Image 1 (tube, one colour):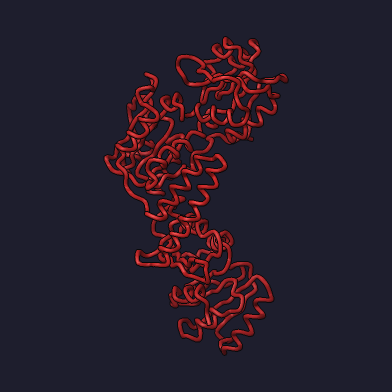
Image 2 (tube, rainbow, N blue to C red; image 1 turned 90 degrees about the horizontal axis):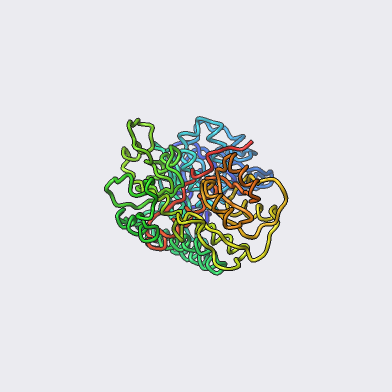
Length: 479
């Protein structure tokens, strides 16, 4: 009576109490659960009258109408959950299923002990991610074939520990080692992601292509350990540590002495980043700003560096050495400006510190149009721009806080200067010297480099589970 998807849902039902079948359609699962004796009562719900009428005919046909309650409900909103031990949600999109579970958990504490049996038709990776964000854990997952298509059924229960999944883990799933269909599912996903990588590469998005190629590799081969020392050596080749400024403190600032499998990349190692590293079980955090900058004269349990040591998480920080490198903060900006506008002649450094560039755009651009492109490049919500209409062509830029370089920009005859953290006196100086200032913020002018750091790491070590920190966001809120 049941197809392979519903049969797997049936197999995963515990049968300790009432089963609720959400989006029941024809109530075939409900009828089989009662007829087989696996449970004594089922609540079958649907959001529409039509499916419930079909369900009514099914339960009458199999003689189980007295043990199946039919409920018109949007998800679980109108379903009484007292005594319910299992909830089955099958045949919907992963996002819809996650929304139903989330609303139920938010509105009813009795849901805490429910066993969730979920069969998404689409976006299983989103559903896996959301289950953990909702405080559940996936205790079992199976892959099933339906014609030439593969689907998954997962069982989720209340988690005894807080955890979050990385992007790779949401794609990899939780199949048993001997699940041959699970292996086939991962092989198909690997092939799909390889095609995505090829398309991104053809579109000129080499960084994204490298990421999807690494995901494809891990789906086929699994993730694996890499010595932290090897990662430090790789980054030293691309961003030599001996180029950092004398006042800087780049390097392996927290050494847990372990190999790593999961790497979290962030602009800053603040408490949010450490929270995320703990929840995702990261072994190494790579950041742009040093977690230890000035000498530490005292330490408390709330300090990020204390918590990193406590949880055996290493921290590799790369600051001014990344600002100066071809594939660093300013190099990423240079590449994007070249792609958007093109250059007339070769760019040069602002000064001997090599922490920014001067370049001439192929054609003059109205200041307003230039600012709009900067917002796209940096993902800014706002840009501060000096007053007065003006076209720009010869420009200078420096990521982070580069106001002190304005004299060099002026001496070079630039029309405009792009940086962050511009102070009042610098605005006045720019006004007097006729340079158009674009303040795109310290965070936004530096944050794009973390995708380049991921690219460097994944091209060399695709077996690493590398995650861009969700917590790497602008620390300011704008009103």
